[in-house]
Picture 1 (cartoon, rainbow, N blue to C red):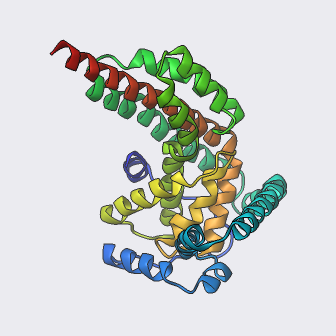
Picture 2 (cartoon, helix red, strand yellow):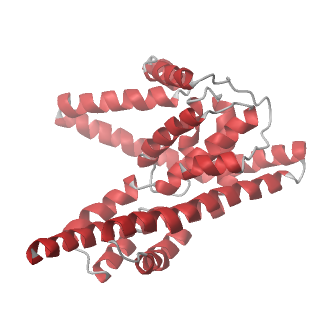
Picture 3 (cartoon, rainbow, N blue to C red):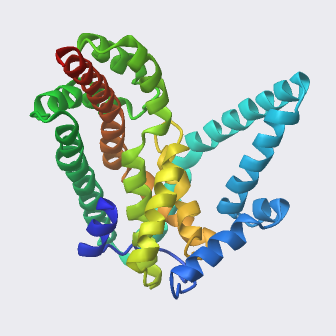
Length: 317
């Protein structure tokens, strides 16, 4: 929601090459219709047309079917296939800078050096939304739960966990740092032994901001008017999609086309936004990972302290 408000107050349009045209969205009903139509599309057609909503929907259906019906041999085969796909994706990500260089060259040749001014405004919007979230909303939640000053705990989490995550740009790689910090804060091991590894995969509030801001930037670029109701639906999709973000550098950017498909934006246009995300990723992804990882420890500590506080109140009564 912070990303939606920020994008509305400070709209950013991107310099996209080619024909940047999208399907106009009339109302929230149109968005829901587009969402449901994409979900129930033929799975083979969804893969062929890069229908990310349909791919995710059928992946959930097939995954549930495999969980309840597959034999052990089938499970091992699926695990091997997953490892194979992960290796292939890693290779693709490693060669992504060459493709990004080509897209940036194309954008600069068409629009001139002013394209970097657009990147600067986009970075300021993304980082500003993330700072508002981590410095205002997170402490507000902590204060409502604990009724005490949350900033000493927040700054400790940012200094120890956030700083390390800023440079590693990987929530998964920062798990040992977070585990050590939780132990230093005397948090119950039963809490952090579950919440820290789980949070490195699921607690991706920075990724939700990135997905929302980039999607709305593409919508502004192609001239799609997004209503507040549709934007709120985008918040839900971005938050759920962020839970599936991989804990590696640039993981959230790959979900931008999924969110763009909610408004009927063509895949080739959305992928140009992914390329822009990789260009600004040195700053954007570093701040995003710092937010994601530090909030894992922050909210784990809040949960533990709240639990202790309730137990003391019960004992006192």
